[in-house]
Length: 142
Length: 284
Image (cartoon, rainbow over all chains, first blue to last red; front, side, top):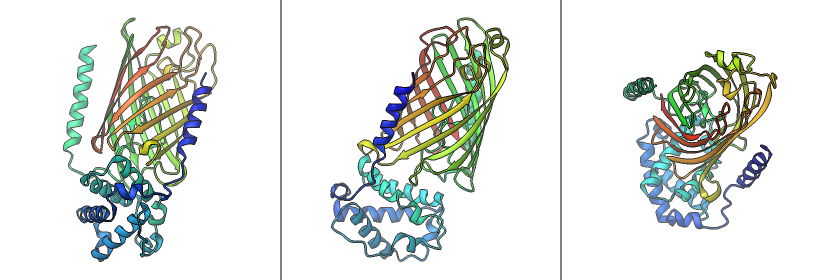
C-alpha cells in the first residue's frame, strides 16, 4: 500500500540532492545586475548589517570600504562573473570570531533584506543563498 | 458545541494578544519558517507528521516556545487541539496537546492528552550535507476510554516513539526552497490514540512511515503534501492512512498559519472523511 509512496519519495529526494551551484554560467551574475548591481547590493547589505544589533559588534574594527570591495569581488566570482576574489579564505577571515549559527542566520536575513530591497527574483535569491549557506562550516564556531 | 469552540478560540486569541505585546526576549536565532507548524499531536512539524525540526526560533543558548490551536472539520467529526511547546537551545522540545474529537453524527466526544519530548540528535535542516535527525516520543493518555474499550482497544494509554529526518534545499528544483521529511514511528495507537491503544487484531508495536514534502514559493508561503501510514489494530472498523495537501503562511517569526485539505478516509466506519484543517501558531 505505502510502497509506491515511499518509492516516489525516494526518487524525489534523489532528484533533489543536486550538486551545489557550479558557476559554469554567468546567469546568476546577470540576475544580480552584474558588477554594478552586485556592488549596490553589497552596499545595502552592509547597511543592513550596520543596523543589526545582533551582529554589528563583529564589524567594529572592520575597514568598511575594504569589506565592500571584498564582498563585491567574492559574490561576483561566485555568481559566475568575470572577477577573482583577492581576499583571505573564509576560515582565515572568521577564525577567532566565534560566530554562532544564530549570528550566521542574522547575516543571511540581512542579505535577504538587501535582496528584497533590490527586488531580486526569488530564484536568484535562492541561488545566492545556497552558495553562501555552503560556507556555514567555514564561518561558524571558529 | 459551538459555545465551546468559541470559548476555545477566544482563549487562544487572548493568549495570542498577550504574547504579541510581550516586548521581548523573543527567540529568533533561526531562519523564518524553520520552526515549522505544530502537528495535531503537539510536536513541531507539519499538520499530521512530526518533523526533525524543533518548535519556535530558538537557536543554541536560547529558549523558545509556541502556543497553538488546530482545528479540523471533516464530514462526521471535528478535531480541536490546543497545545504549547518549549524549546531549549534548538536541542530539546517539550510539548503538550489536548485533543477533543467531536462525533457530530453519534454525539459525544473522544479526548486525549499528549505529552511530547523531541531531541535533535544530529545535523541541521539547512546547513551541512546531512539532514537534521531527531528522536522523539509522544505519551498519550486517553480520557474517554469507554468507547475505545467497547470497540476492542486494549489500553487507555500508550507511547509512540519516532525517528525523523528533515532536510531543506535552499536552491532546489525550479530554484525554489524545498523541504522533505521522513518519519518512522513505532506505535500501538488507534486513530492517533483517540480510539485507545492496541486491539483485538494486533496488540504489538508496529513501525509506520510518514512523510512530508513542501516547496516554498517565496520566504513566506509554502505548499506541500503529507502522508501518514497508520496501524490497523481494531477489528470493528479498518483504519486507513492519512493524506493532506497544505498551504503554510509565515508572515513573520511571531505567527504562522497552515491550512490543509485533508482526506482522512474512513474513520471508525464512517467513510469519506474529507475536509479542512487549520493550524494557528504563535511563537514566543
